[in-house]
Image (cartoon, rainbow, N blue to C red; front, top):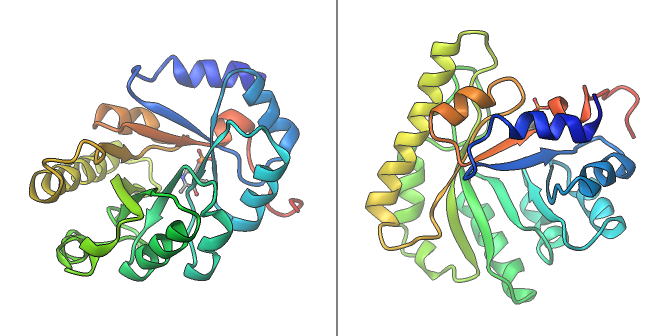
Length: 226
Ligand SMILES: *Cc1c(COP(=O)(O)O)cnc(C)c1O
């Protein structure tokens, strides 16, 4: 199937309020343009250098989502244009995003990444760590970023019940934070969960944003990618 057909196929399973982020990491600009010509505007990348290169080369009405692990010293390269940073999991990174956003006169939307999987992972906050950050007096001084919601990744497994349980947990974390910290803030509204293998389950559990790569662009081949 073509990229356009793949996008239509995925979208046929998404309720209208769920946004599709087409994850284009490792894929050449021509393939992103194929999706763009079919109307796709939100693209996700996980490497700063690759994202900047594609931003420079491609149409300026694309919404670029950063979905990888962001190092504080690289925030400056994407601050001028990034649409949403999905994987924020430390106060140090929030401070860096705020300071780079200030330099370019922007308010950058961010999602807090929570650790919901069973697998060992270096990335993502626990609920306690998340609430600790949101309670910091110093956090309230950050005026050039906006927390737009939460993001998480489920365990890579065939066990659908396990995956659903993890997505339900992220949804409940979202609800807790919403009522405790963002009740008056309509910008706190996104639950970024669901990838090619599990997005149908994520949508059932309340995802507002799915990040889908291989189902749209085909399998990634890391050994030959540049
Ligand atoms: C690569 C990636 C995706 C997309 O994965 P697919 O399985 O190809 O759909 C989604 N989210 C994150 C954080 C990723 O790194």
